[in-house]
Image 1 (cartoon, rainbow, N blue to C red):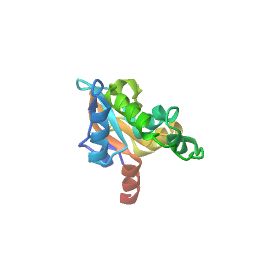
Image 2: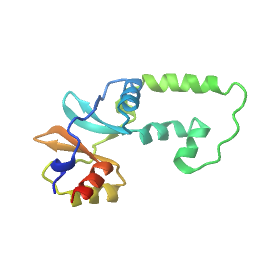
Image 3: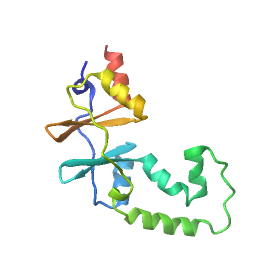
Image 4: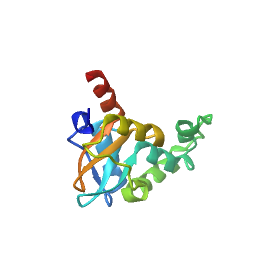
Length: 151
C-alpha cells in the first residue's frame, strides 16, 4: 500500500505571509491541528497547534501545562487583559514567524511503512505529500490507521 492510497487529497493550506489569526481560523473551521504553509504554490513549512502553543508558553503561564505539565497557577484579578493584548499582537504576526520551516514530506509513491517510520522517528503527526514539486496531499496518523484497517 502506498501513501497515495490513504492520503487526504483536499488539503487546507495557509500562505506564509497570512496573519496567524487567519491560520487559526482555518484550523478551527476545518478541525485540523496543522496546515502546510505555502509561498505561492511552493511548500515552505508547516504550522501546528503545537507551534502556536510553544510560542505562548513563555508568556502565558496556563499554556505551559499543555507543553510540560506545569501546574497552572490561579489567575490574578484582571489577568485576562494582558493576555488579550498578547493574543491580539500574536494573531497579527505572519505565519512564517511561527511555522516550522522545511517540512518533512513524502511522495505519493512512498510506501506506508516509510511514512510511518518518518512520523515515529521525527515525532510528527502529519506529512505533506509532494509530487513534481507540488503539494498533492497530506498523510496523517489517522490516515495510516485507516490504511492499516484496509489491509
